[in-house]
Amino acid sequence: QSALTQPPSASASPGQSVTISCTGTSSDVGSYDYVSWYQQHPGKAPKLIIYAVNKRPSGVPDRFSGSKSGNTASLTVIGVQADDEADYYCSSHAGNINLVFGSGTKLTVL
Amino acid sequence: EVQLVEYGGGLVKPGGSLRISCEVSGLTFSDYAMDWVRQAPGKGLEWVATISSTGHYIGYADSVKGRFTIFRDNARRSLYLEMNSLRGEDTAAYFCAKVRWDGTYAADHWGQGTLVSVSS
Image (tube, rainbow over all chains, first blue to last red; front, side):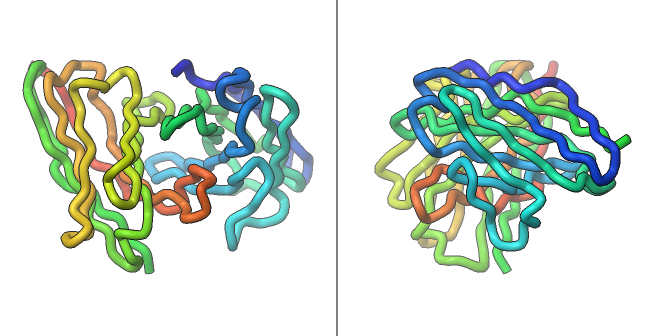
């Protein structure tokens, strides 16, 4: 149950796009289309922004999108806004009833 | 409005025990699987345990297996985490989270967390 690998940091200027990767293995990301992404602002609870690789919960702007290729999933934010500055975590189903989170990426809006 | 509220965090000595709980309102609690997820100070999210809607299926992270027990009382709309043999590395904010109904293993509602500190 090793954490999925994410870059520690990412940055973008307002209006630009940014992509955050999430690399797992053939036992988790590579085997299941059950990758989720969460946004967490400081001192707050995580918020689900993408589930099942590329689906958005109601209320999440379509500026957020997800994709997957092999053992790597990605979150893309287009038209970055100041409020997008937060920590982002991926997670993946890992067989049976197990779950694994990514190491987290701090997105800085320049 | 869906609400999840955690209770029971606090300071406990290494080797000690603690039970934390999560009360859920605004939905039919017995319809949903539930997670416990923790976050050590300044660190990332770590999955701790999941319990199915009926309580029949349970999974634990290797780091807590054999020491922590997740259980639920659907009549009380409550989720619990019994933590034994606590260690310093168990110090974290513990979040309960409701899992989506559609089998995608995504947690779409979260509590604000309860802090557990393990220290002598």
